Image (cartoon, rainbow, N blue to C red):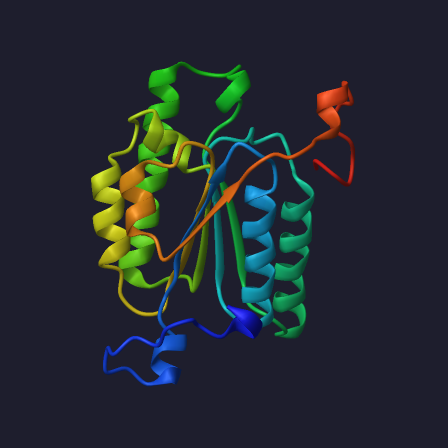
Length: 204
């Protein structure tokens, strides 16, 4: 796809403008870092277009504030104060999830994940945001906390121009099949391979 030009133009009866404005459903999966970072980069582009941004974090601790959160919250304040860009909401659904679950039981986390998904369903039905980042949402699906088939049905049937990006390892195949854009992050090298711990400005 040189310079963003498609290899094939489908005979679907749509104009170029109509085709370019269709909502995108994207998956960022794979074992390497960068899945969430890429999604937040897309959110910053969306903010620049004046779109409403909704970020929903399903796994990272509520106490952990990543650099992208600070940046997007600051952009939300810029919008509130100047009208530039678009509004930003950032929600965290749990604390101590994923690899180091320190708070609550698995049943508590599963209930939190389902509650978060129900809220996203309501917002999609209301067309509340233009761009959704469901950060690390693949984990509740992989663990069976949220029904994958329901998620696919809801996202496929969403109305308007609502772009949705889901991040996380082990994205279910049904989710991948339904997506328009799928990226798999694979590792070639990482400083941790030689014993280096994560560092500020790189991992957070």
